[in-house]
Length: 412
Image (cartoon, rainbow, N blue to C red; front, side, top):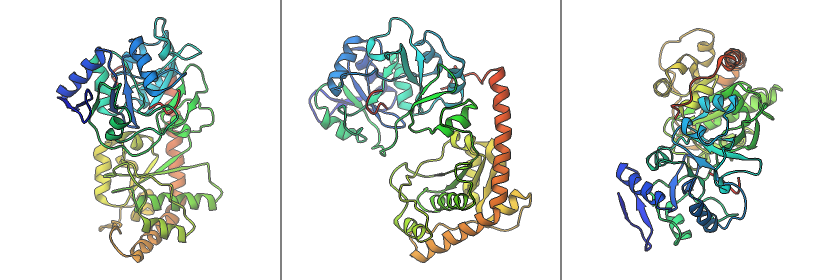
């Protein structure tokens, strides 16, 4: 339910059913509501309320550029389009809910504030529950421009949003402090190859892998995903070590590597000790940012390398179809060769231990990857060829049904 915020007139809405009903009512009355998405906090106003859109532009101090919109489902997104390109249906089926925004030919009658100069509308179905349910409860699409004055960094703390916009907001839907991160990727779906207008949370290579469609500047190269618990030491060191081995063998740019954690918090960096011992070996993981593993990541990855049997089980629960391509690091060579060694071979977490433990962990990681390198490359490449062939067939016969799936400065 709503409650009175720290400032007069600014309400704090809870994220439960009662709170979202109250926030939706504020939107119906022409109000502007801040709410969390999976990438940033957004400022929401009705996509069909010209006066509310004008107030939103004044609140942000922006002078040009259409607002991005979010809807509860792909079916609702399609109602904003004059026509729905086949590529858009394919992207939606494989990337929604999620941080991919589609440019569609806008239907007639939409406010100028949500249509681009080429007659387009930018829309997505977000992965975050609140961002998806709020337009569903309201009964109309809402804007998702980033919560910041134009030209400034997006705000990630709901408290900061209230202090920055003491007037003009109807309220804020309660949510966590979000990690600074990229906004959604904006894709022009009107023609092929797909043109990425803004590369954000989903890379060009990921877009090509997930959709099977041609992407300007992107290629569906194989992906190896390394997984640990918090994505702060073992898996980022493994990612960095594997990328280094790829460079040393002249394979840079031909295979992608990424990492994630089964209990990561999408915040912070690799721990200092991991960065230090990696740097000693010529591996730079200083730019790494932890992230929670998602079903989409497991779907995209051609080989998943985990540190413990427990993490293998977590991946299987997240995506049972990924179980047969999930392998234990300290068994990677044997498992890819079709052998199943006996006994526990978990790689212990060095968190909280002396620097020597991190050095030992990295030495083990590098050794196991070196031994299994050829088979990792071979099997990841073969799986990618199989997926590519399957994608061609699906794109010719039609993608899975996306109906139920769930540009200016720093749009969320």
